[in-house]
Length: 291
Ligand code: UTP
Image 1 (cartoon, rainbow, N blue to C red):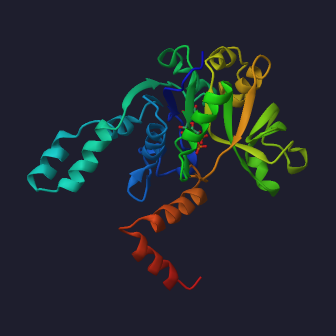
Image 2: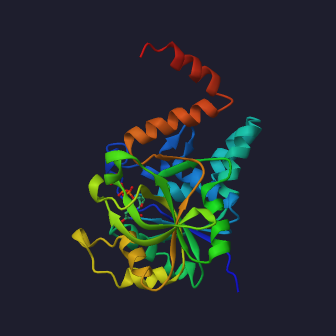
Image 3: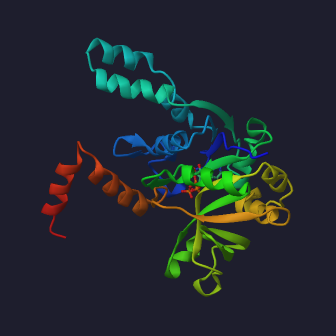
């Protein structure tokens, strides 16, 4: 029987050190792209893909995420009193957009460990993982494209983008071969974490969107912890390859690494220019700069 992807896990318990001091008291996932926290873009992407349940992995100091997706009575009462209906709608939408459950990761022990924290809430079904700091713009939401591909192949799928040149060394890179008749899929045989350019087995770099089968939890539990007790998701996916098929997926869209300062600035420009309200004024401002 074909299984559907109904749940999505958002690991949001990391320390966000690349954004210090901004992330000392504010979760990285709550940094705003124009006027919306980056995690909300991901949650909206999941909803647009038909995901019914969102699971956010949080930690100490991350309560702003829970507050963001909850009702703010004072704010709503104040906006209502002042007749600011458009803003009231925006505030209410945050609290009603999705069914969200939270689970804690008490120590930042890596992405694999963060995903493992969601084991009970996910149960025995395939699920999506979205890294909130990868913000992806596209006509069809990236995770929707992947959910549809999962419905076809019923195997784990990792989103990839083509990375040329030495920049590949910042990514996990897939080894494998193209799938005949399915141009977006890549049959994975292995993966290498942050290879030198000359050692990279392909140009298919792993980005922050996955569909995983529940077998991944056993694989994470059986990992030997690396430096700092970290459990890496890519190592667990390597384990999955021993027993199941795993596909790379080249999605359509533009991915911004908003967990990185330059990536965040690029995303900000891209998203701001597309906006009807601030876009035209921002474009004029950029044109006026003598760069
Ligand atoms: P990153 O490595 O980009 O986030 O993890 P980080 O560790 O918070 O950031 P830097 O490198 O120190 O700046 C990608 C996602 O995985 C989550 C992060 O919150 C982020 O959304 N994550 C990472 C966890 O939930 N737990 C972890 O132990 C590690």
